[in-house]
Length: 310
Image (cartoon, rainbow, N blue to C red):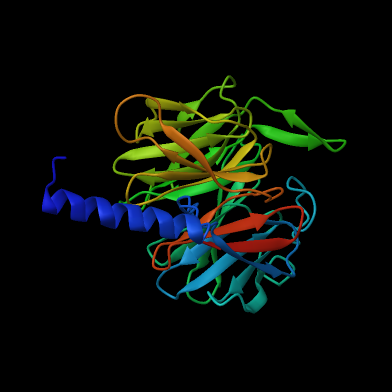
């Protein structure tokens, strides 16, 4: 018989390992599944529609509609919440206060020390430090101003979802648009087309404006002049909030799926789409805490905000 000392030793070690595994009934472990994002719930709100991280003051701002998203009832308010989940001031900016007009606040943005808030057919402007009212920018012909993205030069891009509510039903108005407001307050429409499927969430990055649609299972990338550059399909529609991460990924909320989708449009071919978090009913306009890697999800119908550490 042919014999080789090194081969014999290797076989002995291998056989011993197999016998030990069998004796101990050891089964090789499967790779661990990615951990679900840690979530914390903060309650006490009233129809929360949007969350914004004020990075300078390290506080979360929550817009509260308080009932109908289209009624000019002047009862909306903005809350301040600490990153630990403590409600610091439930009605920091209150439409019921003298000198403040705020009916159904939705998307928010901070630029040049000012807080801009979409409110049906106007943008309300407040001091980002103390919440004092500064001005209102009326957007003639708008039906439902919804989300706001601030551009590097201080200009704003605002979505007009082009709907109203009649007898409890969402009804198209044909005003679907992306509205631009320059730093001097001049208003123009980058895109105005009744065929748009009700633009909702907007986010900007790297010379592009990303748009999520209430009436379609897709997101678009557009140039800052409004021209369409890319169109990405998602598994479900009734999209609301959208944030763009520093590495190029997108996080998008879907009412139809009660979920947050993660979309990676980088590389060739179709984008990679996965579900980042499920079981989140009525997820509205998302916020992003860059310093903590935390997604801020208002649950419109549950009067809660969920903090997702991803």
